[in-house]
Length: 68
Image 1 (cartoon, rainbow, N blue to C red):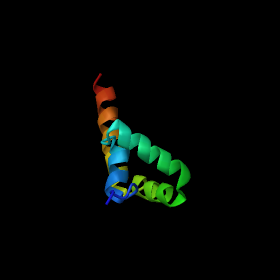
Image 2: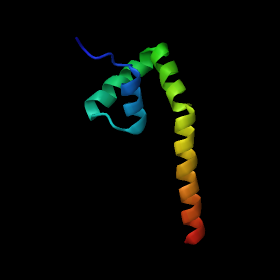
Image 3: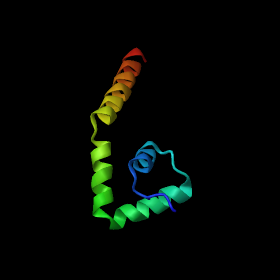
């Protein structure tokens, strides 16, 4: 049985850039035609954990800019 293309682990791998080129293209194509998959992706991208990652990244960049 083929793995569900829009399962949360694959969507997270998509967000993190961890998919092969073929899997990335396959999922991108699916997202263009599947509203439910797009909504799942948006929910994952907007999670508190993802925002914490962004906050940490931006803080490191700000600190690096101030020391340069």
